[in-house]
Length: 606
Ligand code: ADP
Ligand code: MG
Image 1 (cartoon, protein in one colour):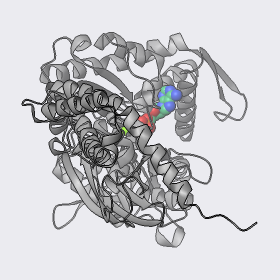
Image 2 (cartoon, helix red, strand yellow):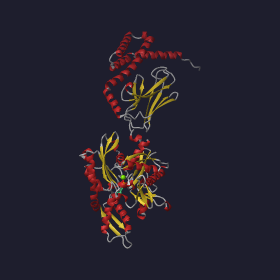
Image 3 (cartoon, helix red, strand yellow):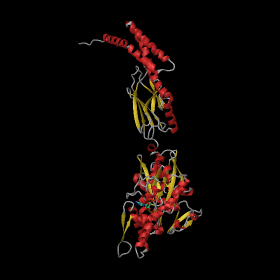
Image 4 (cartoon, helix red, strand yellow):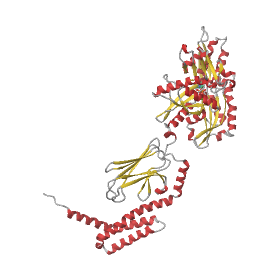
């Protein structure tokens, strides 16, 4: 089992594919979003906290608590701008690597991120009741090699083998099901999270997304909107309040902002500002939008740049989809802005703050095999069947059948005293066995008997993993033979499928003629010896005119048989004439056989 993880700047999530469905896992409190905050006190003062409890410690014990550690991943001290380091001291290790001071202890960004990953691992293990040690983890598209390596190390420190590092926009596109778009489709992924903005343009090539352009601002996100609301509140609240109220003001601002995505107006209660009075403020959506507009507009230049880098001049015409990612894209103003900028309504079918984790989960499911059937194998690309007597293709599961599938047919022996039957498994759309592809073969032995006496059931079953099982059973003796064919039944190159289908169309007429011919020839091969045998037995009892008619008809069948090229309709007609001409002969045969049987019958004692 492999889990998918969105290790976000603000929030992190974990998911897994369960019985074919990607699901995100909730912690004991029912929460899927884990705030990416770590509280790491000195060992003697208690355990490391993550998530909501750690976030509360941001206000109480900021020295030992850190948010947005993702900004430090894989960075060297010299690369960091002062805004990133925040209130924590930084140190440089002997190898030039970065360490972040939490109180007097220094920890690497990987070790801190590992605490978030350990928490997600615990959530997954509790939900799934099994150990989890493999993961797909997402990173921003612009992460360089050092940043990706650091993310991988964080996973390893948390006891996870990182099976793949996946770009966030690619994950989001997977979550929105965009891998089902046609070849070389282009999509834009607009990701406005808590502290970062990313715009990516992807192109789908052979079912895989490539990031063809990316731009963004690592200092722009929902936090800025919270600050804007705090400033607005401060302008309305005089005089100055105690400094320790700041984190709570921010929290009130965030709650108000999130509520305004669904409502037109919110009441903000600030009972904690002083001991004497309660403060109550009303913020309308319109007012909020005027605060937010300048910030949202800052994403515009990045979008235009990414479009230009991707060589897109007409986004409405050239983009096949625009998808929204990141909690801040729940804001109606942001949605309107995106629709207007790209000239296209964004796809809002997924929860924007869960899309990346969902995509990571789908990727994890594809890697572990849990999703193979869902993603890759939905229908049989070509018909499956067996060769029957005369070299014809007998289809058992037609092409485009949804998988899993099961179908069967009953066959018999074409020749008397045949000791076994050869089951040749074929794939393709052609009428003649030899023009289709051979997937495998086996023989089933049965008790020799007259022609048509055997009863052989052949069943084809394709399971969800694309494994084809062929079961052949002699229904008289109940002996079974089973053949398993791994994935050849469903994993066929697109080009080969196309070739097979176009060939079958090109040859449709001759193929059909060949099938009718072969079937007619089987019938002639049965009729002619039967007529000869009957003539030998009772030919002299026949009316000469009738005998002449039979001989003419039989001669026509022989002539049709040796005609070149094959004339299937002629042979079919000849068979029919012969069949009709022998009606009296056949009736006489039956009567005589009946009379013989009666004569041989022993009388029972009375
Ligand atoms: P990240 O990718 O940075 O880890 P998320 O995608 O989880 O973060 O986005 C977090 C941001 O989304 C926060 O600023 C949060 O306040 C904001 N957010 C979440 N829900 C809403 C909402 N309903 N309306 C507006 N903003 C929201
Ligand atoms: Mg994110």
